[in-house]
Image (cartoon, rainbow, N blue to C red; front, side):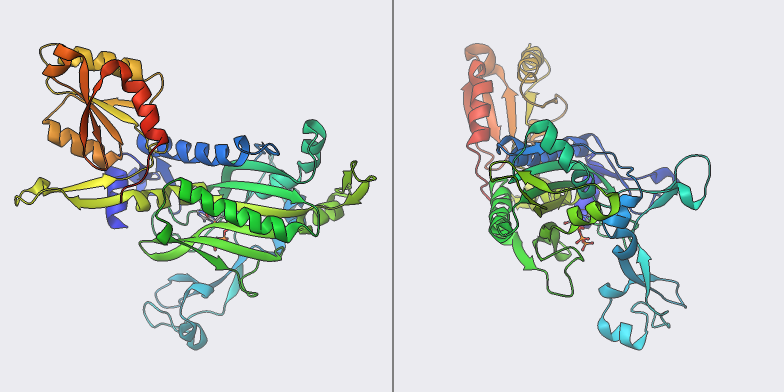
Length: 444
Ligand code: ATP
C-alpha cells in the first residue's frame, strides 16, 4: 500500500487533504490523474447501470435532507459503531476491530493499558442550518446516498412512468465520522458512493437479489479486474444491518487483506414502510396492469464506494515487471494495467526528436486524436524513459513519430502491456485505437 500511496502522490492521482497544514484525517484530494480515473470509473458504472437497462433511471439528490429522513431510516438510532478508548495511550478503537481477548480483558492492543467500557458512537456528521444553533436547526450530512432515492421514488414513478420492477441509480458524496481511517483512501470520512436501488414486487425479491449479485460480479469481470482477487461474503445474523433480509459483500483482496468493495442488500420494504410512517405519505405502488393492486415494493440495493473502487482499480492495476537483465536501474518497470476505458490518458504522442519537423507532425496527430481520446504529449528525454513514464501512469497506447513517419506516413503504435510495437498509417490511428480498446483483454 505504501508503494501505491507514493505512486498516487507522485503522479497526481491522490493528495492528502490540506497537506500544508499537516493533513486532514479521513479526507483526500484527487489530482489531475485521479479525477480523470474517478470520472471514468463513475462513467463505466453509470453506463452499466443506466444505459444498458431500459428500466433504470438516474437521480442526483441533495446531500442535505430533512432531518426526519434519518429518524425514519433508523440512522439516528442505529447507525453507530462501538467505541473504546485506551486510558493510558489515548488510542481509540472500534471495539469490533480489536482482538476479542483484548476486549474481554479491557487491555489496549497497542500499549497494554486499560480500555474504557464500550460505548455507542453515531457516525453521522451533525451540523446546524440557519443562524440559530439550537435543536430545531440540526441537520446531517447524508451517510448514504440511498435515502435521497427513496424519498424521490414516487416523483420518479410519476414523472417517468416507471413500472415495477425498475431501478434508480445515483452517484454522490456521503459522509461518515469514521473512528478509524487508515489504509489510504479505503475508509474515509468523506467519500463517494455509486448506489442503485431496484424496486420489486414482494415475493420476487429473492430472485432479483440473485440476479443483481450475478450482474455485479459480471461487471467487475468486464472491467478486467483480477477475478481471483474477488470473492463473496454473506453477512451472518450478527452482521446484518437493521433493514436487511439478506446481504452479500463483494470483497477484494487489497494489500491489507480481504475487504468489502461493494454490498448487495435485500432491504425489504423497510425503508419505504418507515417513510410512510414518518412522512404520513402513502408510499404504496399501484399496479395499473394488475387491477390496481397496491403494495410497498421491496428494494434490492447495490451499493459500491466510488473512491473505494478507485483504490481497488489502482491496487489491481499495479505491477512491477522485469523487462531486462542488464543489472541497470531500468531493468524493471512499474506499470498500471488499467483497462483502456478507465485509463486517465488513453494515448501519448511522442516525437522521437524535437527537430526535423517530427514535433510538428506529432502535434498535428495529438490535435486530431484529442477530439476522441484523452491525449498526452511528451517530447522531453530519451524515448525509453518516456515509455516508462507512460507505463507508470497506466497509458495503454503510445504513438511515436520518427523519420520513417515523414517518409511513408506511418507511426509506431506501442502497447503498454506487451510492449509490442507495430507500424500503423497515421490516417488509420483513430479507428485502430477504437478497435484495440473494444477488443482489449488483460494479459497479466
Ligand atoms: P464498512 O463495513 O467497511 O464500514 P459498510 O458495510 O458500512 O462498510 P455500506 O454502508 O454497505 O458499507 O456502504 C456501501 C459501500 O460504500 C461500501 O461497500 C464501501 O465501498 C463504501 N463505503 C462505506 N463506508 C466508506 C468509507 N468510510 N469510506 C469509503 N468508502 C466507504
